[in-house]
Image (cartoon, rainbow, N blue to C red; front, side, top):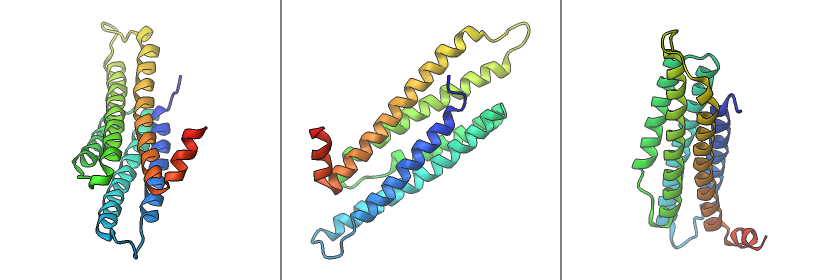
Length: 179
């Protein structure tokens, strides 16, 4: 069982943010005839990076609230993370980055679902009484389902990173396929 699953989320999203920043800088080339398209790509990737950074902070704070069993704090940070996800979903990607945006969106939706399920689980535990105790036999299977949703979300974010890498360095993509 992963006790502090949201901390892993934050670490994974931090890695995504760093990759996005690096890839956005790689796409800069002042002598490129498609400068407008590259500028739009950079602007979009900078926005994604900003949102992912905010989401990472939200998830770190969520993890802190989990460690303190602070359901109110969990809800506040989950709400903040949800707003960050909504912000990412509202971004309009340039035509060359639609597939990347689609994967980011799928990943963020999965992460939000996992986050919502995680806080619902703790809310149920917190609301338990002697008359209506929490059924701890359901805890492990629920955490397992949350983990699966999280992993699915991270998989989409990784796919988005792979798509970005293949756009910046098509040979890197060919090398991955050859393995």
